[in-house]
Amino acid sequence: MKQQKSVVGRQKSPGSKLKAGVRKLVTRYSLLVTFLLVICHLSHVTAADAKVYIDITSPAIRQIPISIKTTASFEAKEIESIIMNDLEFSGLFLFVAPEVPGAEIIVQSEVSVSADEIIVLWSIIDLVENREVLKKRNSAPKKSIRAIAHNISNEVYKYVTEKEGIFRTKISYLVYSSQGNKDLYLMDWDGNSSTKVIPIGLTSSHAWSYHSDFLMYSSERNRGWKIYLLDLNDFKEKLLFSSNGLNIVGNSSPQDLIAFSSSRDGNSEIYIINKNGDNLRKLTASLGIDVSPVFSPDGSSIAFVSDRGGSPQIYIMDSNGRGIRRITFEGSYNTSPVWSPDGKWLAYSGMKGGKNQVFVIKSDETMLRQLTFNGNNESPSFSPDGMFIAFDSDRDGKRGIYIMRLNGDEQRRITPKGIKAMSPRWSPYFKN
Amino acid sequence: MKKIFILLLVILVAGCAKKLPPPDASLSLKEKSAKETTAEPVKKETVKEVIEQKTAKLEETSDASKVEEASVLQDALFDYNRYDIRADDRPVLDSAASFLKKNAKLNVLIEGHCDERGTNEYNLALGEKRAKAVKEYLTSLGIMPARMSVITYGEEKPVCTEQNEICWQKNRRAHFVVTGK
Image 1 (cartoon, each protein chain N blue to C red):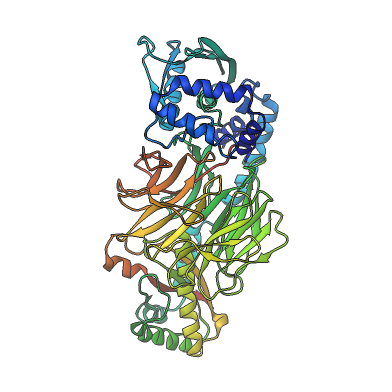
Image 2 (cartoon, each protein chain N blue to C red):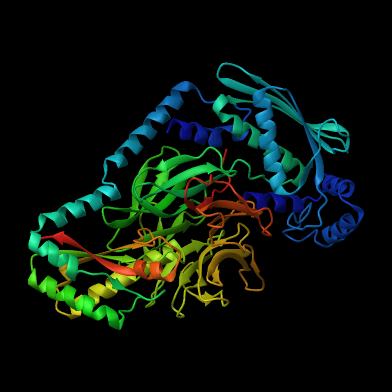
């Protein structure tokens, strides 16, 4: 949302910044692409989603040549490799060795390390405009070296795209323990810095709050499936909802309403409740199974799974429970819906040829795309910029967490092969 | 926990990484609260302990009934993505009902399970439907509903882990656990 606002803001004053964007664009992309983009750009100048740059999912993009120049220390090299991994995955950059000419952007960094602190003095040099465009000094505890590097990646990404990078976001996921439990973990978006969060019980569905201030999850403890919230400021867990039967959390809305399914009345139905556990409202009443409710990013709609039509399919309703309509019609098993951050797409897992695959569908049903093809692929989750999708897959044997670009490119495993992991949930941006 | 704290501090604070790291005092205070809150859930029963307790309770019953349980309380099996009682489940459930009538002081937990295909959330709901279908069937045979509790484990606790129909069929089950008097 934050990102959208800034785009809208820019639209209202299409002055110097926009011109600068167009200039950068003209200088950076090949003629044909540039031509098409300028046409496209001009024709959309007043549209709400006009992009100063490009559809990064387009394979026609010419990548921006970039070099990193850094000092020789171990820490400097580590930072360099983290930045390269970040920016390469975005698909927008082509790394050029510093001694080879051709880079249009140079990231220069000097890293110094004291007993417990790491200090990075770094700058971005734009060789097309022939000037240093940003210079910063970051210092943090040594253990935070990855965060410093991801922060630099974000700044470079933002300079080039004028959008927030996702390189400091996190992914929550579940790991099978040797006791047959499933524990909730957090890791960086690239699979590093993995940490166990909830050490007990059999945890199932989980989600980040819309405002990234708490995690919500369903755990089986003492023969009951209950919904818990974990405050990310003080790390205190509180029980949000329990009842007889199965209670599984979906996600939360911008208004901090939480959608979940409960069989408290005997049959699994969709409910909403506020984050204090008050104002419970029941939204569905069908004979079949209704599960996996997810609020759209603006809170106006809820997508969910229901077998009311004879097989599990994805439906959308208004967030007051009215206007229920079916969205998926291909295949006989479609579950795990999630909204893209702009609310225009739903990703879900659907059975095809006996295997689960990740699909994306426009929420007005006008377009359907299959993104995965090998093994079983489930539990998609969008990055907060909508450019990437995390999911789990058993394509390499043991189930693990994978990420890919929105168009299905660059599918890669980010959890180690030795652990069995599933159900990734990509965090929103964190507020500073 | 310390690690995660530092991580989260980094998320929250290093957003502007040029800011200085927070002073040690606040760090240790936060760490302390994190330790306290995570220490609390560890004390609670883990699922493993719950299972061990169930086993223990099973062993408390007399030897004779134990033998009978093993032969009488078999799993009811289900078709893929279905939760209706199949014709071949009926003899199994009829035996379960007569066992429960004979042993009027025993209660049962009915666990609903699924095969690994499909998604966990939907399978949890499906497993619950299966357990409830068995409970309803036994109720119709005259067993008091209060003697039967249900829980779903979805696809979380398979008895067979190969990827084939024989194995999947074993996993699509309602399983009885005697919960004592």
